[in-house]
Image 1 (cartoon, protein in one colour):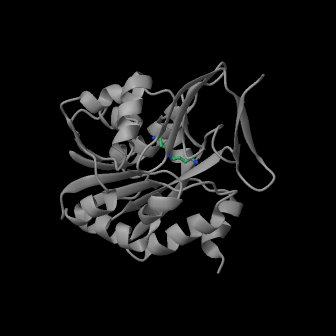
Image 2 (tube, helix red, strand yellow):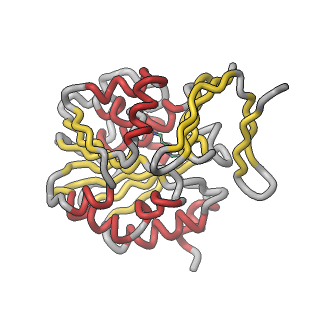
Image 3 (cartoon, protein in one colour):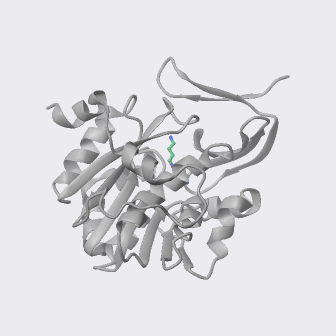
Length: 274
Ligand code: SPD
């Protein structure tokens, strides 16, 4: 019998991936965690049945979530990662040698599973520049004032407990937790399938940050294949100080940085419509 994983993206569309080998399943306090192997895509992590990463394309997501803001901030040293218990975001942030990272992941079970099954991502979590906190990112952020240069929100989709990471209250706490020239970046869903979510984020964020700019990235295994991130800043513009980096990346480079902030009209319309 063939075993297929299916994630529905709408009532009548989705993605199906053949499970070559189930590797791990756990019901944690927060969610169902699954890891399985596919011959083409490698190991895959799903949370509550939604793909979080595949070994084949996680580099696109993690490089593009991290490098645009860390390249633009001219003196970034203190970074907060909210979520990201798999370690992929920390791995990329550590390429910026001067950065120290606080990583706050609500679900310890995600960290443990990824340490075991995704070493190329989770090795970062044992770096001495990374401090791990297993607690609720919204509560953690509320306690911090003017501490971070960059905050990176590597959340799951806005379902269940992760909804809190898409609310105005959380963005306000992030604003206060950032220094006077700080940058917040967050994953912000698909401009094809989640336009309402992006519009809501834009509305909430632009009431708080003077600069709010979305950028686009292709992620083949995410809903619709086209994904977005949002860059919010107190001072810097996303193309200011953009430069080539002196470390190895598989996706990110200066041309990609610039190009990803150019938005097609159907995406601009999300923010211009009432
Ligand atoms: N629909 C999938 C969105 C998942 C975003 N988070 C991925 C976490 C990888 N570190």
